[in-house]
Image (cartoon, rainbow, N blue to C red):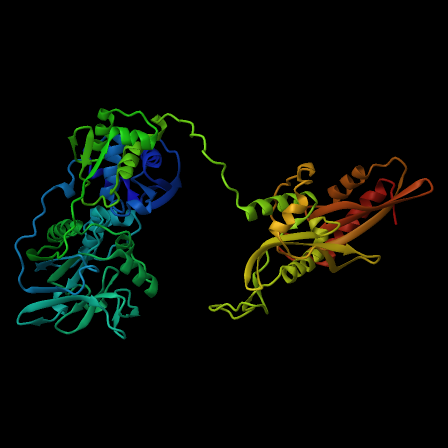
Length: 626
């Protein structure tokens, strides 16, 4: 979530620290920071570690964890975190003030068919507004976090969502229908075949698992609940009266609907995380007041359907339990101080703290949650490390994991490379029920086919890889004889008089548990494998050239290679001696050279040009090219 420093400042009288200091505080006590950007004259630039705020605004991209999506996908939630971490008092907390939904408006009839899917629905009727551009301060706030300004009404709903965390939607009341001068809004599952054109001008086909807000008089879908408003009731320059909706929706239902429609919005991402139904009236009241301020008009009244109220919970935990969980030595005073900083009201009952979490903190349900809160605000660096207690029993080792690691170490030490091949095959015993492409629709019964293909492909590239012989192994699952088994198999290229063939030597599939018994005794005597540095490879074809030359006795091959590499240029990616023999006083050295480009396909001209340069340099040193 993108958070504006200037926006956060609205919650505080005291000047906030620099963006870098804010990022560090949040990182060590709450959430990771993806990036910090300075906004100067509308142009962002990414920075890290700045000590001063020399831009017009600073944007922190905060990675809010799922357990805090209830309350921290908003500037208010992040401001509360900074207040606790930095011990900076907020001007006031809008969610701790009494909210009024008066007067009641009787000309809107609300009907919720399933309170489990819509725990609360709050609406306000606002009359005589004038839709137009938003004031500059509102546009700047929204644009700073990447939101496009639409008009003063829509911008007000977006501002409150990013400010307090409650998504809102405004319907043009003039486009809804009345019966006996009363609007009817029905919250129900959509009917199969119903469609709605969204504000994005796309048409969405709904089904009975999706929740809709329906114009009950006309029986027309006005909105996809919690996700997207409908185009037919959208706000435009002709709108004068609106119905402002701030509801609460079932998070799982919103997530499934969003996935099914491939439609994810800022509103749906918040409802998916589950937010408190107690937040709805705060969002509606704040947005209604803002609309009246910037668009004129007046609030005629509110309606509030709240069939199943959120239950107030309490958590009892003492300092001893918290210290046992954290491994800390915090006093009662330190625990109480941390709870106060976190705005977690409590009373003392003997040694126990009885905490009543605020309505938005749905993540606090058990003593362990309180211990975590106390620990992170106090600072984990202040908790002394302690040794883990000795284990009462010897830990069990998964036999397949153990066997795989032993086999892997042995074969890597022998010069083999591990490969992973496809588990799908053209035939087998088990057919895949939902194979998307229909290609190779069976699960494999052995590793042979995949290893054979891998060996053939790698033999073609062994010059580039600098290998004399290709040796591969695989540890994988096969499905055979109505069993699922993890097996080991190896393939080794077989040299012949001519060159090499891919009818390679293979060990055959062996169950890991059988294989491990063969190497237990010799395992401790295996040589250690050497780790080579990784370098990226080119996707373009390579060209191989060989060059042989007569050298005098005592000539070092490394000296010859140095001349070759110097005059070959940057296209030479591999060079090595592959043959040598003596005839009289002279020695013949043969070198294999591999040329390759990272940005194009080489031609014979490229290779011949470099070979000519190499030959000239070798002849100049007195060597005879064979």
